[in-house]
Image 1: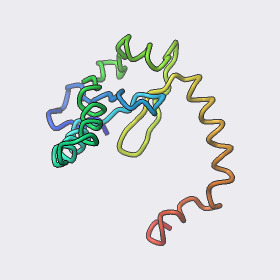
Image 2: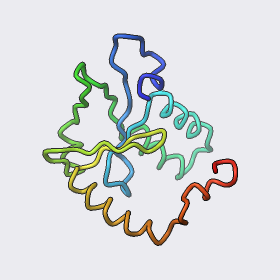
Image 3: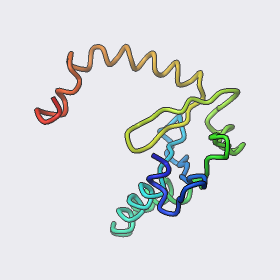
Image 4: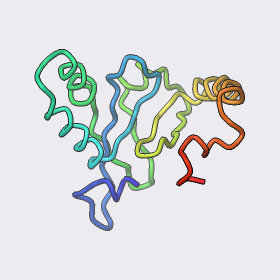
Length: 136
């Protein structure tokens, strides 16, 4: 995913991506490929100037960290992000379609358990039915 989403990537190099940490509603760091964050920036750039655009620029432009995967496949989290999101000894990397999220592992496990219980009552027996006939 990261290699395909990094237009400057070539074989033998480590892919780049962006860590977004500006959304105050999130207890996790949302990570985007370079291509995906550029699509978001283009959409924000197309907006009229105003409060909504300012808010999105703050989240998706001002509060980001450019990152790369190291030679061993690890991601180094800056201290300010570890502190802000309470990421201690272990982090959980969680896929989310075209992004991935970095959580404190304990916080994620607790959230996942609560969410799983809620989903039992919220979702139909076959969750793919929410996508419509073409997905079944």
